[in-house]
Structure formats: C-alpha cells, structure tokens
Length: 318
Image (tube, rainbow, N blue to C red; front, top):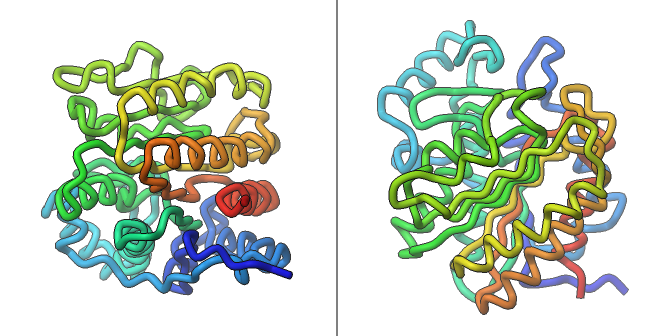
C-alpha cells in the first residue's frame, strides 16, 4: 500500500514546464517531461502533496533583482529575440512569464513549508543559481534561489538560511549576492572553475566582511566521482550544522552526474540521494525539519530524471 507523506510536497506546473530555450538549446523544455515520466513511473505523485504554483509578481522579483533588470527582461520578452546575457541565455516571446513561473514555484514550495506542520518540498524546474541581481547568466533569467532566501528573511522573519549546492557549476549568482551577508550560510561542491563555467568558487572564497567564514566552496577536479563527493561532503554537513540555520535549501543540479554533455564530473544519482537524506536528517536534528530541494541543472535527461526522483525518494523515506 502506498502511503502519502503529508509533510512532503512537490511544486510544479505546465507554466514552469515551458521554461527552456529553443533551437536545440541544452536547457530545453523537455527536461520537465523527462522528470515527470520518472516521477509517475515510480508512483511518487501518490506519496506527496502536489502544489500548483502561481506566477511570481514584480514585488516578488524585486526581493532580489533590480528594477532596471526586471524591466529589461519584460522588454526582451515582448520583443522575443536576442540574448539576455552575453550569449548563453536567449530571449523569446513570453520568457518573462515562464521565468516568473519558476520563481513562483520555488516561493510556493517555501511558503508551504513555512505555513507550519510541513517540512520538506521539491521544485524540479528551479534552482537557477547563476542569475545576478542585475543580469541573466548561464541559462538563468531570474535567481529563484536568491529570491527565496530574501523572502524567508524579509517576509517570514528568519535570521539564518543555509544554501547547499551540488550542481557541477558554482552557484555564483547566490554566492556573490550574499558574499558579505552572515545570515546566508553557503556551501557548494562543484567542478573546479579551472575547467568549467563560471570559473569561480575557489576554496579561498569563504565570504568577506561580516560574512567571512560563513561560506564554503569545495571545488573538485574534473572527473571526480562519488568517492570524492563522500570525502568532502562531511565538511558541508559540519559547516552548515555549525551555524544553526533555520531553513535549508538544496540545489541538486544533475549535471554533476557522469555523462552530462556540458560538464566533466562523474557522480551517480546516489550522491544526490545522500545529500538529500543527510540534509533531511540535519534539518530534523536542528529542530525545524525545513528543507527545500530545487532541481537545478542537468542536461542528460535520464540522469536528471534519476537524480531528482532519487532526491525526492530520500525526502520521503520513513
């Protein structure tokens, strides 16, 4: 008999599914379908609360992004051509609305957790960690991770939010936005910037000013496997747990799995499941249980489906 876990939810919609770029772009709209097929094959829909996200408002976007940048995306969305950055993130007609839907999904999931009596949620098309406050980058139009962090602190009164990132790419848009902010506890395992975009995230980048020591970057050499992940992962748990965060966010990008066409890492989905399982246990030990997982990158569709459903199954473990 399949048992539903009332403390775990999934936020996704057809609007979010349209977040992707045309012309054979690696970040295509078929990523959502790949996850959805595996999600239903494993009968996970029957075990979770399904959330229907709303589109984020301009007020929501302003929690993180500048007014000028939001207006630029709106204009580009109406024109439907060109690029939102130097050449990685194309514009298309309606890009503003679908990007705002991604933010809406992450905010809906975080708000559901904060409503009380709920603990864990997952948003698959989410975790757009490269966008800066004033620009797009790396397939990311709006940084839903940063917006959720700001919402948790400004709207829900939290003082310390932890952000953990195991995507192959460094979460530079989150890191630099909060580099000097001691209230954002940051830990990122990624392929070294010497071999992969965006070229940042050195182990010497530990935060600055008031935020010094609250940030942990663990770059790994190209070709690193689960063995290397397991070697450094305890540092993440120690770093996060030592700061007593009131909410945990996991960006679980699947592009760190072997075979991804854009990266050089060799993790398996077991690493992603372990990250979710251990962070769930940490959140429970901290006394609140709050954990939001965001899908992030991943450009091999089978890898993406296995990794994200593995994360969700770890959140659902009894």
